[in-house]
Length: 571
Ligand code: PPS
Image (cartoon, rainbow, N blue to C red; front, side):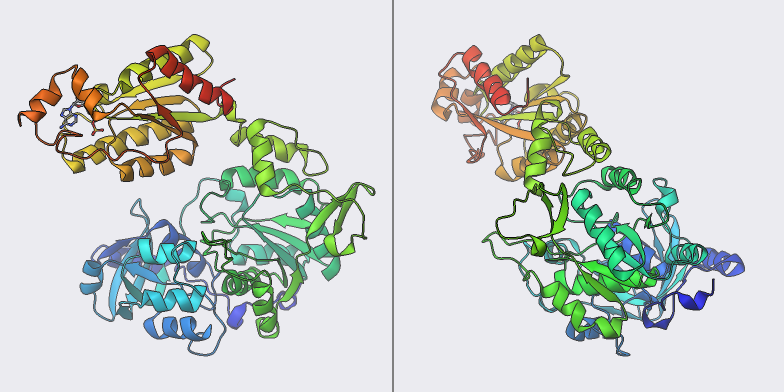
């Protein structure tokens, strides 16, 4: 098969920035004396696609002039369409230490040298302008704006890359083709008309039907090209997704479809991102891309206003379709029609015709309850994979996080809850009590605001690991500050349930009991910074359970057990 039959890469040239042989050896040697920058996870994704040609025609991170042009005009300075600023952000110290023309070594977290960069420009970007120009908003509820404003460093450096190595992977190695490798495979198989399907979600029957139709429509082949770099926070992890895609691939006719993984860090940038996705797929050898309603959209802000209109992405890409040289296959929402026991696009549904669909939220609910997921919706092998990593609630990890003043009764109730759970059996339970934890896990920490935060967040970290491994963690520190509890809630919530139990015994009552005599000492000034006396206790306003210790210990513990049972966390 002649190479000319494959589509031209964007800008006419497929970059391969990886040096080999003597050149690579020389770079490695040079790098020993250069300042090093350790790349962040997002920068690692970006550099991989720069080095392997996925971002052709870019030959490095954008310089200031290219950046200004991309932000303002959606184009590189030579006029080539390019919608997304690919920038290397660094802190002030690094930026101040660099002059134009300096060389820097770019490494991964293990120190592996990926590339040497010539820093052609070093500048402080106007992030507000970038956010508005690229994402159409400076609202930090947009994930990319949040990244830009709250995570990215304040300076950018741009310049050409001389690559030494691509990032190393030890998972799904057989599915991580570079643009060159995928193009070679297409050539070998004689594929020339190929539609790419971009996804960050598991695929079910509706997606299968949709992709079948897309391939049929273009009279060509199909590339299932899921993103495994960075997607929207809260998405299903890519290990699970890839196992699901693998199962799904068995359902396509042989030689119709190919699965390959894309190490892209998505920005959820809607219209601009759609154009970017098309360019990347073109570089990988695809002639068409499926673009759906609200493609790569971040959803809505907290007031319920969507960041982008549902067809803005399709409109922008169609506006540039000729110039991009890519065909766009609009995504049609597929619905199940029980009468034909099959799927059809929603616009082909007759009036009054019965249709069925299951939303993402409903799917998550069914996974959480263990309820049936019907065969018309997905394939049993796919559902099995999802269930392995998303067990029903009573198989998920749980943290019960008690908080309350010293002497409020936290430890007593926490201990009673633990033994009740142990009596029931079947679940591993760990108690991380405030006083006890301070004798080992957080030994050496005192009661300054900083030490308390470290103490509470360290407990939260251990609880999150227990929760991840599907155990039950019971924590009982004072945890006086709202901010630390929030960090823990987010950290633990990624892996299972976080249940805050506020032991609401009043200061007067704690002081009256004064079991350890500490309140008297604090009042006498013998203990400084005592919670409730001269250090604040920020009472929770969003606790799942409020415990009233005027009840008996047994009743308080039973309230917690009842809550866990009612919510489905224990059988
Ligand atoms: S914190 O704020 O969450 O880090 O506190 P915690 O790790 O739970 O430790 C609280 C226990 O330490 C004793 N203690 C003090 N508490 C509050 N403030 C000061 N300054 C202080 N100094 C010592 C006290 O016995 C607490 O035990 P509990 O079990 O809460 O009564």
